[in-house]
Length: 141
Length: 419
Ligand SMILES: Cc1ncc(COP(=O)(O)O)c(C=O)c1O
Image 1 (cartoon, rainbow over the protein chains, first blue to last red):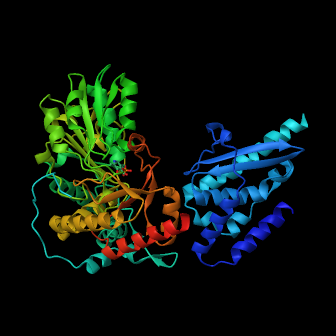
Image 2: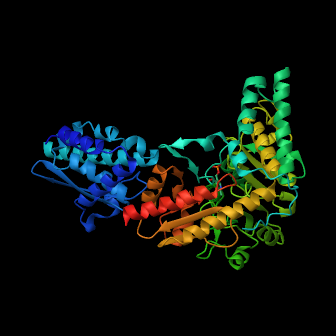
Image 3: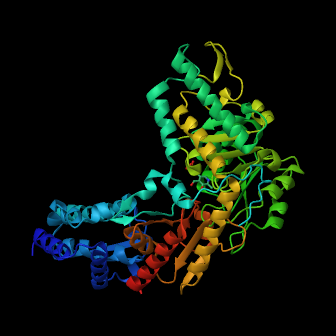
C-alpha cells in the first residue's frame, strides 16, 4: 500500500466512531500493536524533544528503506506513534520526505490534542522526516 | 485547611447560593465536547465574574485614554480609576501606603523586578538567597539570574515527602550571608501551605528581608502584609478572578525607595536630559511605559467581588470541597495524593498507579473535566518526590460537589480504559 492508501484506511477505521471515547479506545488498541523499540535504544539519543510524554524513536536503514520502532510511556501517545509508524515505516527516504500527512487532521488528532501535545506530534513527524533526509543524503554519496 | 495569614478582617456577608455564584461567571455554563465544563484548573488561572468583564469593557468603551499623560477629560478619568484600583489593592492586602503598591504584568513580572532591583542594590559576591524546594519556576529562575550576575548563591529549604518545608533546616540556612528569603505562600503543585509568618519572623530576627510569592495565597484567604510583616508581597490579578496581564508588587517603602528602577521609559521619570535623568516618586519609579490600566481597573472590580462574597464563605466552601474531594479520591484504588496534609489550599495533586498522567488528563478532558498535568512549572518539587509530574485538581468556591462526582466517575473511566 502507498502512504496515501494507508492514510485513507486509517481515516476509514476512525470514521466508524463518532464518540471520542471510542476513538481513544481505538488509539489504545493501535498502541498495543506497536512494534516496540529495543530497550537498549530507550536512551536520550532517541528521545524526541517537544513531547509532554516521553517518546523514543529508532530508525533502521536497510535495502533503501527506513523502518522505525518506537515506544512511549503514555498509552495514548503510543497509539499515535503506532499510527505514524504504520504510515511511514518501511518506506524509502524519498517517500517519507514527500509524504503529506493529511490523516492527522482528518481523524481529528490535531485539534483534539492540546497544543503542547500537538507539538509533540509535530516533533515526531519532524524527527521522522529528518531521519529520512539524513539517510537520503548518505545514500547519495 | 487553615489560613494562617492573618485575622479575619472582613465581616461575613449574606451567603449567596452557589447556583447564583456560578451565574456570575459566564464561562462556567460552557459545554466542551458536548459535556458541561468542569473547570478544575483554577491554580493556573481563575475564571472571571461578569462584573470584572463589564468593568474592563467599560474602560475600553467609555473612557479609554492613556493614564497620567493627557490634560483632557478621558485621561483624567482613566488615571483616577487606575489610582482608585491601586488604593483598592492597598486596602485589600492592608498595606500602609499606596506608594508601596506597584502594578506589574504579573507575579513573574514582580519577582523579576525585585530580583533585578534588589539584586543590583544589595546582593554581591558570595551572598546568598534562600528559596524553598516548593517554588514555582517564577520564584527560582529570576534569583538564579541574579546569582549569576552577582556571583551569589541560591540556597534551598528542603521539604519532607509530604511537601512540607523543614523549618529547622531553614533556620540552619539563615546566616550573615543571607541577603533575601523568597518563598511561596502555598505550593502551586501540591497545595501545601508554608509557615510564611514564622519564616518571616525568623529572617527578621537576623535583619533579612523576605519576599512572599502570593500567587497561590491571595485568592484563598485574607492576606495582611502588615500583620505578616512581609518586605515584598507579589501576586497576579488573573489568579484572583481578575484580568490577565496585571500583577502587583507590594514592597515596604524603605526598600522601594532605595532600590533602583529596573526599567527606564515614560512616566517613571521626573526630569530627563541627556546629561542626567531623575526618577519619579514611588510607585511611578517602577512603572515605566504605558501600564495595563484596563486590567488594573478590572482587578479592582475582582477584589470588590471577592470582598462581597466574604472571606469566611469562600474559606468554608473551599475547605468543604477540598475535604469532600480528598475523601472521594482516597477511596479510589491505586490513587496516591501527593502533599496530603491538613494545612493546604484547595489543590489536590495525584497519580494513578501504572497510568500515565497524560493519559488520565486526556480522557478527563474528553469528559469535560479540565485538570492540569505535568510538573506545574515546579520541576524541583517533582524531582524531590521522584515523579515526572502529577494530575492536579485545583478548585475554588464556584466548584461543586457534583463536579467532583464527575471527576471521580471520570477517573474510574480512565482506570477501566488503561487497566
Ligand atoms: C506559586 C506561583 N508563583 C508564580 C506564578 C507565576 O504567575 P504568573 O504566570 O501569573 O506570573 C504562579 C502561576 O502559576 C504560581 O502558582
